[in-house]
Amino acid sequence: SNKGYARMCFFTDKFKVQDIIGKSIIIHENPDDYRTQPAGAAGKRLACGIIRML
Image (cartoon, rainbow, N blue to C red; front, top):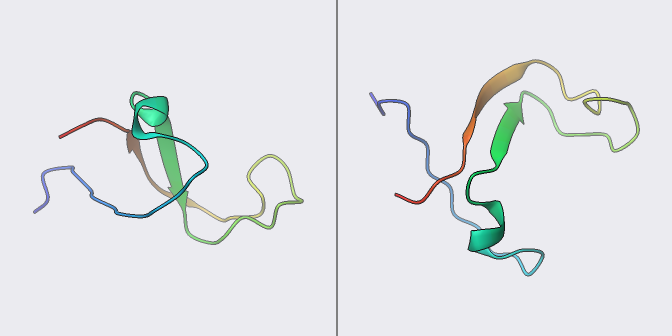
């Protein structure tokens, strides 16, 4: 069991770590189509959480 924790690693120049700490995240079953509102036809919600430092 992961005890409710998830990890992910990626690189971006769009934001800094301190900009997203405390923000929420929702993971959907499909990619966003960037047209349909409100969820971009992304399907069911699979997981959600708050971004924090470990």
